[in-house]
Length: 178
Image (cartoon, rainbow, N blue to C red):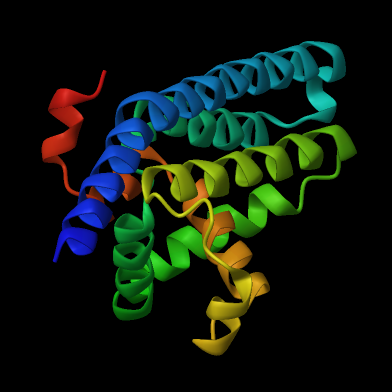
C-alpha cells in the first residue's frame, strides 16, 4: 500500500511538472516558431509576388494564424472529433480535403516546405497538449494506427481555418484563449 501511494505521489509530481512547467514552455516555443513561419510566408509572398497566388498565401497564412491563436485546442480529442466529423459530414469532408490538397499542391517549393513545417509543428502541439511525448510508435502499430495515417490526419487538421476548427473543437476554449 505504501508503494502504491508513493507511486501515485511520484506520478502526481511528474504530472505537475509537465503541465505547469514543461508543456507551457514547449507550447510557447512552438508558438514563436509559428510566428517565424508566418513571417517567412509573408516574406515569400513579397519576394515571389504573383508567382505565389493569393489563394495559396491566404490559406496557408490562415491555417498558421489559426494554430497561433488556438494552440491549446490542438490535441488528440480535437483530432478524433475532426476525424469523426470528417467521416460523417460529406460537405465538411469536401471542404477540408479541397483545402488540404490545395495547400499541398502549391507550385512553389518554399511554400510547400512552409506547409510541411506547419504540419510538423501541429503534430508536436498535439503531442504536447495530449501529454503524449513518449507514446511508443510500436503500440500505435499494434492498435492498427500507422504513422502515415496519423501524419495524413494531422496534415488535414493543420489546414483548418478558424471556422472549421470551431466545428470540431469545443468553442468554450475560444473565450479563454487569446
